[in-house]
Image (cartoon, rainbow, N blue to C red; front, top):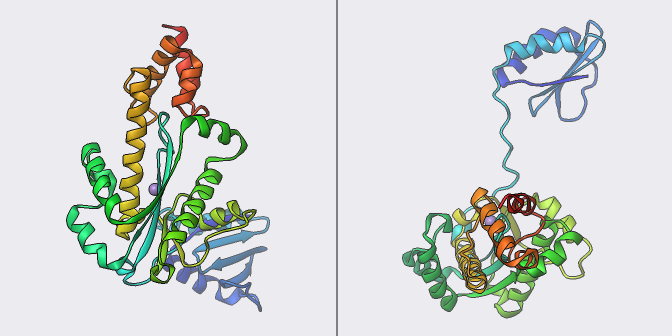
Length: 304
Ligand code: MN
């Protein structure tokens, strides 16, 4: 069996080419199915063309050459309702999952529609476009203005939990927990929707929570780059980032070595230095152990 992706124009050409060989019945979701030279050709609305039979490969080649379809971009799996950005929304985001040093922080924050313009005028936006200092300063202001829940998983706690579950599992449980906590304190009738910055497919998220007794399900939306879709996610992200930075500062002071965020080569160097000066146990208290950086640092330390 050979499968190729074809563009609209190629589909039209194929339809025309095989029209005399059409089968009586087409499979579901297909545009047509034909039998030609012992090869069954089925073309689907998705642009997928299936060739089955002995000469499937040769037959497919004809059309592959004709088609100019670029590799398919991953389809946006979901979209938000119109005017979603003007709704009263709980936004949820996490920070630190990609950083070797420091905690994993999940924050859910509620922005009622009356407060959207105020937060905008404060400069609340995608935290990736803000400096660390600005984030810390903004976070303090935001925290005083909106209801929120902060969940911080220190490296110590993270390293105990992580061997038992994937990071995706951990994040799903944390988001759910933060939402449950926040929904206890906000006026539920006021909440129009909940937006989680998508870190895995919604299907996977719900699978991760399938065993949980209490799951926040109603009006939950997922989208990638959600901080651009509703200011509640941008606010949650800023609070989370600020919490992450403060924890990183705290750990840095404790061990007397400035800890960077991220997971690059500079991180390996610092980690090696920590092993050298304080030992592995200290490193384990400030870093996410399962990252590849751990082994790299151990190797570097041997050469010190
Ligand atoms: Mn995120």
